[in-house]
Each structure stands twice: as structure tokens, then as C-alpha cells.
View 1 (tube, rainbow, N blue to C red):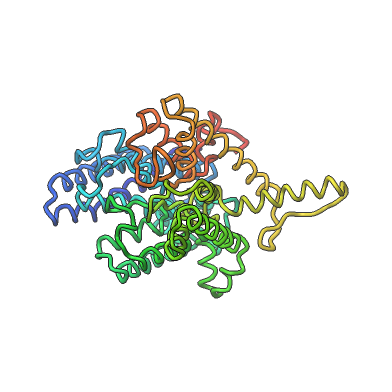
View 2: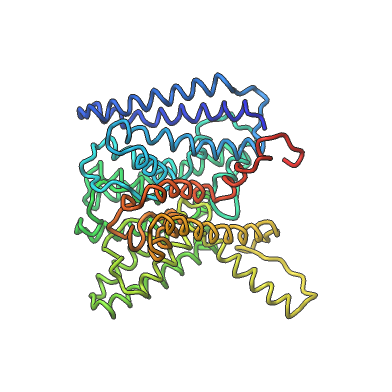
Length: 486
């Protein structure tokens, strides 16, 4: 591995992080938030200091190219470094202790949206803006956004894009990696602007609309009020939020192609059609269950069902009503959508619908081969043939998610949390949802978790955002040494 290249690009990332803190700093200085302004000024200084040290050790030369190991290291270490620097405003401003600051920062950048803050309304607007910005930068991907701005990655930028993009397939829509990143970033920014305008038209004040738009499109779910969305008393806002959460669960690569070839591309996409079908079925079941079991009127039941199915399937985690009080069948379907997540290449977390499709097709293929031993066939997704690496990769990821869910649940039970709550927190954290059922239910926070569970939650949020194997590869001793196998 060329550590000089890794250090050089990490130096640019920390500089980028410092630049991202300037808007909250200006906001804090403008509205006379003394503690907030000082906290962000210190944070910017630390980012510059980190940049200076990294650039002193490393740097880029004209013919440098990023290889697979450098790509993984830049992505993994970049996320870790930015998340650590991102905790400084919370801690330096005296708003949270060190561990809670770490949890809040990791939750923000990973798009989990879980918070340890009991009362967000007492926080200054600069901190609220930084929370939303951390969601937004983490949604599409810190390094992908960075790649859209910088040009020093060369051909090896493909490895970074693969390491950070979610899902079993890593489609490219343009020959150049930087052009590909710029196209994704352009769609991301455009959707955020449209979403903010829509929220403003629904009645939210500009600051609230912008913050909610960033966390909606990023499927992060951080809010600026303690109350649920339902407390706004705005029916149009709930439907609008549900729409944009569903849109954000679609592949951004698909939207790039749709922009060039027409909207028909969206409805021809097998994964997105399957995702919409899951949304439809889950909404019907949950709405029917609410009407039968809780005697809720059809309009409220349908509105509540579609909002929470969209919120949890997209792993955004916004809450309109306390779904922790729903009947068992509704909870089961919401938990299922939470586990499945959105589409590959979206900002949503979870297992991804593409992997579910592949796993079902893989099982069906095995059954057919048992019946017809000489059968020769190939799995496809959306009419495109897939090689064995993609199919087995989906199976390996499913296995890894299940094992890590069990492991995290075991850690929390060791830390004093009961079995049901441990499973709920584990699934919610690994799926990057945030709220769940029980101890961290719809109206609760991660502040109730013991210290060990909070610390481990940071690690599991980090693992889930980078889809596990990027981080696991970095933990291998061979990764950091010269090897002919890389």
C-alpha cells in the first residue's frame, strides 16, 4: 500500500471537513451563539491541524493512481477520521460528554439518525444545522461527494466508489469516475433543493425545511424538534415526506440514467418496482391491522401506515405517531421493512432489495438444479446477467449482517439489556434506521443505552454504513503489508 497517497487524500478530506463547518460557524457568529461559534472555530482549527500533519507525511504526485488497498483505506479511514472530527462541536460546546458526542457524530455521518439528545430544542441552531449536515454528507457518501469536487483520484477512483457505494452492484453511468460522482452529486443536490421547497410550501419555516430536506434525502432522520412529525398537524407534510423518503430509497444511479434517457427507466427497474410493491403490500397490511385492532379511521390508518412504512423501509426513521404502540402484526411488518431497507445505490440502509431478489432467485436456482442436475443457466437482474461473484457476495453479506446482529445483541445483553430490546436495537442500528421498538422506540433515544452498548453502537454503525467488508478488510493484518495478492 502507498501510505503517502492515503495520507495525502485523507489530508484533503480533513480540509473538506473543516470547510463544511464554516456555514454553522457563520450562523453561530451571526446569531451571537458564543459557545457554538467557539466550538466550531476550535473544530475548524483541528481540521486544519490534521490536514497539515497528513500533508506533511503524505502527498500526491502527477502519476499517482489509487489502487484497491488505497481505495479501501481512504474510504474506511476517511469515514473514521471525519466522524471523530465531527464530534468536536458537540463536545467542545459543552452540549454532550465525549462518548455521547461520539455516538451523535457516528449516527449522523452513518445516516442512522439515532440520537442521545433528550431535548434537541435547547440546542443552538448552528449545532442543529451541523447535525443535519452530517446526515447529508454521510447520505450519498463523504468520499463520493469529495470525488465530485476533487480530480486527483485518477483511474483508481473506481475502487473508492466501489468501497463506499451501497448494494451488490456498482453500476457506472459514465466512463470517467469523477463524471460519475458529479452526476450522482448533482441528482443528490437537486432532490434536496426540491424537497426543501416542497417542505416550505407545506408550511415549514425555511431553516426547518432545509434541515428536514437534508435529513430526508440522506435518509438520516435527524430533526430539529422533540415532537414527532405528527405533532405538526400537517397532513400534506406527512404525505410529502413519505414521497421523498420513497424517492430517496431508489438508486441514484437509476435517476442519472433516467435524466438522460427518460423517466421510463425508473419504472422499468426491477429492483425499484419490487421495492414499490413491498411498500404497497406493507402499507395495506399495516393500515388494515390498525383499523381492525385499534379502530382507527381509514384515512388516519392509511396515512400513518404509508408514512411509517416509507420511513422505516427507507431507514430514515422519522416518526409521525408512536408506532411502538401498534399491534404485533404491524410491528412485525415494520421490522421487516426496516431490515430489508431500500434499493442498491440509494442513501437508504438495510439489506437492500436487490440482495433479497438475488437470494430468492439463488434458492430457486438451487431447487431447479436439484430437479435437473444437467441444467445450465445464469441468474439475471433486470434482464442483465450476473456473475457468480455478485450472487455469492449477496449471500455473504446476508450472513455477515445476521451474525453481526446477533453479536451486537449479545454485547447489549451482557451490558444489562433484555433480549427483546437488544434484538430491536441491533436490527435498527445495523439497518441504519435509528428508532425501533422498546428501549429505543419511536419516542425514545439512545441515551438509555449503557456506556458499553453506546460505544459498540458506534462500531456497528460504522460497519453497516460501509457494508461490513470494507471495514473487515482493513482489520486484516495482510491489508497493511505488501502482498502480491492485492
